[in-house]
Amino acid sequence: MDKISLLGLIVGIGAILAGQVLEGGHLASLVQPTALMIVLGGTLGAVMLQSPFDIFKRGLKMTKWVFLPPVVEHRKLIDQVSQWSHLSRREGLLSLENGTQQIKDPFVKKGLQLLVDGVDPGRLREVLEVEINTFEEGMRQGAKVWESAGGYSPTIGILGAVMGLIHVMENLSDPSKLGAGIAVAFVATIYGVGLANLVFLPISTKLKACIAGQVVEKEMLLDGLMGIAVGDNPRIIESRLQGYLHRDSPAQAQKAGRR
Figure 1 (cartoon, one colour):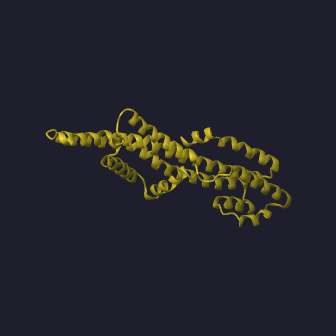
Figure 2 (cartoon, rainbow, N blue to C red):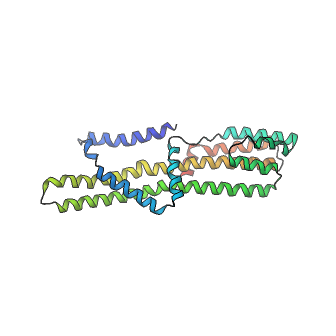
């Protein structure tokens, strides 16, 4: 579990609630179901309107990556490719065929099978690059569902604020109803801006970072298979793949996630 995501959510929301209390306000004043319904419902509707169903569903399924990111074992992949390169150097490419039946990852299995089949290295790269690009684009579209929610949410919050003020203006003759209308107005704005900057946009960025890590893994595999295909020395292949580990640093992953 990615504990820093949970901690960040708790710290962000906790700081806002603590500030409300320290300023002498009441936490109950921030609980406005009507405002929350306006912001969440309006944002959900806008995102659904702009997104094809498959992409919308993919974006929702990817949400679990925020707390349970996909396992990406780059060092394990390097060891595996190194074993393949040594085996193929000793016994030839056909010796790798038995290993394809034990692989569950479709991308890895396809790449290794193409290698065993003796596909031209240029064609091998072309096929796998199409797979990588298609995967990355599809996953990024799912992440953009949350990015879009972060864009719509503040505006829907303002819409809720205007609706609250309209309610206030309609009841100027009844002071007992003014407080509720004003509360909905201001709290709707808080919900809109808060959800966008504390939830929706951070989720989008985290998902893009997870996608970047998976893409690096696929690129490493492609590079390793290309090295085996052209007959590179196993040590050269392993050394080249080690260079990808520097791209997997937190700073690089975060930078890639903002692309």
